[in-house]
Length: 161
Image 1 (spheres, rainbow, N blue to C red):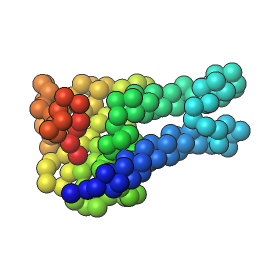
Image 2 (cartoon, rainbow, N blue to C red):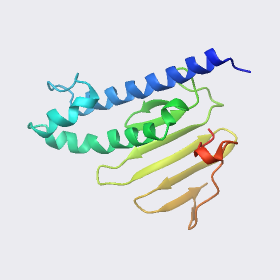
Image 3 (cartoon, helix red, strand yellow):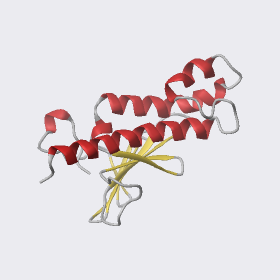
């Protein structure tokens, strides 16, 4: 069983990963501009008043999703990373995933909406696309929501990975 110190270290590592993913998205959307290295909390003020507003409009949904998930406490439970343009959430303490580790991949569409995929080795992939409101498992469309696998702390809305 993990000690309180180990639990705190893991939680701190997870929260630091969310800080890094915010900086990653700011650098990605403002690459080769003076705004690339600013703090993510300052980007809205600076981007709204500059020629970079269109870039900020594309970045805003990503930072908004991250902020909302952090407000819900997911930054203390999951590690945030990226794979190309997708936000990847896992319980991995380190960068990268072992083949047996589950992950949640969130890809935001520039036109709006998102694609969310849950991948784990022992089960077929599960995918939600909010653009088409489709639910897929093994290529089969679903018209109703599948059950969500929850932890014993279900009242806290913790999704098991």
